[in-house]
Picture (cartoon, protein in one colour):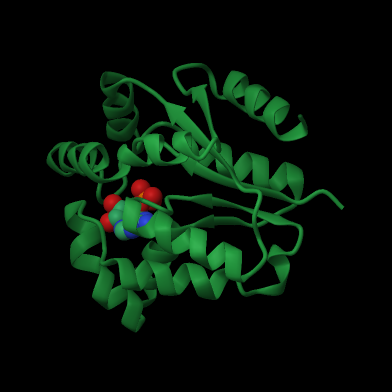
Length: 186
Ligand code: AMP
């Protein structure tokens, strides 16, 4: 059995959510989006959702402990045996260090990291078009600042560990999907 474990990195609006979902369906493995899980929890007003909402709505990162607990819980479920795609986690170096340790403990190594790259003007235009609650122009700008300060350092973090592959996200959805399919089958 081939096990595919992928981490999607990239600025908000790079298309990583869409691509992660397409690929996960193709490969029949879970697509684990921490943003989706948080939005669902907010909608249901669970304790997690209540704790996360002010951060999510203003475009800040929720505290590590909250997302780390939810990822640990999710990666303990039986459906991850054939692999997974993590979308939106890790989002900063402290979370990457946590994940590395967690995967080692769980014997779930061999993960590859896809950096889906796209220029700022492209991602801002896409996000404004999407119209999610945290997609107002001010919040988008803040999320991009947070991305640059907290998440972009992960490109070097995973590059140093020889786990990183960069894909140009400034292409049509089909072209990006095609490139990603080549990567996962190689
Ligand atoms: P996303 O759907 O990935 O764009 O995430 C939406 C929002 O959820 C982010 O702006 C953060 O507020 C929160 N979030 C998602 N994943 C994480 C994470 N790994 N660490 C901290 N906050 C997160």
